[in-house]
Image (cartoon, protein in one colour):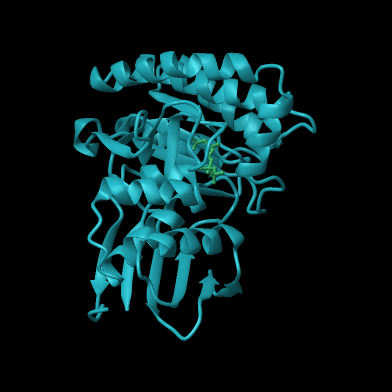
Amino acid sequence: MTVALAHPNIALVKYWGKQDKPGNIPATPNLSITLSELVTRTEVEEHDSDELWLNGEPSNDAKVMRFLAALRNRYPIGYLKITSSNNFPTGAGLASSASGFAALMTAINSHARLGLNAEIMSEWARQGSASAARSMFAGYVALVPPLWRAQAFAPASHWPLQVVVAVTSHAAKAVSSTRGMELSRRTSPFYGSWLRAGGDDFAAASDAINNRDFAALAEVAELSCLKMHSVMLTTRPTLAYWNQATVAAMQTVRDLRSQGCGVFFTIDAGPQVKAVCLPEDAERVAAALAGIDGVQQILRCGLGEAAHVVDDHAVDA
Ligand code: DP6
């Protein structure tokens, strides 16, 4: 039996839309931070057929099944019992598919003794879910051309920012990212300009991180998030992932920043608000977000580790 852990990540420069070729490749370069505290734990063991358990329930998740089939086309991997659980809400815009595929790839690599390095595992994880490529690495992570394997951009120690997550709903999202971004590509009038701006946003965020320039990072990260949500909102049928507490939390973050607090927000395909902050301001941000009507839970994170194996009892295949 082999156990691997992986953390979700949140993109500061988002991707929303894929290239028109196989491999589940993002249309634009993107950049994320891997979170600590939130974690997916995935166990794999030999079995007489494939069996998948997600958060204590049997599952036949089609994405996982396709991922296993693709891996088996390339490597000799026997049937597996896979048991995976998250210590945070699943499928609700908290990047559970990112940590899920990163943990699964890491566990299978060790269990089946595939001997793949993190870059190659990242390429495989990307095929499961593109954001999963980034959860293979710690700290600041880039997913960029030409190979579209994630790579470490800067370690957490370079700039140990913190993240306060305001959970405003525990419900799983109604429209998956995969389907949502395909609808956006086909129908949003803003999709083309969103893609054209991706490279500049990536460059601006890279500079801001290299220079530890919080104001510059806040500006580009919020803009990337709001442009992505503009594309979502102008998709037909509309992709409206926010609720009232989401909007209230965004306003609170803006108010705090105008009072000199080092914080900015980012939001993915769900209603949760992730407030990225300077460590000295995290307490104040958490208290302010906790006081908003409709905020159900506050999660506090730092920057997390790469996906890794914690317990490996694999036998020779
Ligand atoms: C809004 O990586 O979940 O979180 O590859 O179809 O599984 P699939 O999509 P996924 O999309 C993530 C979208 C996002 C932005 C981001 O993380 O860059």
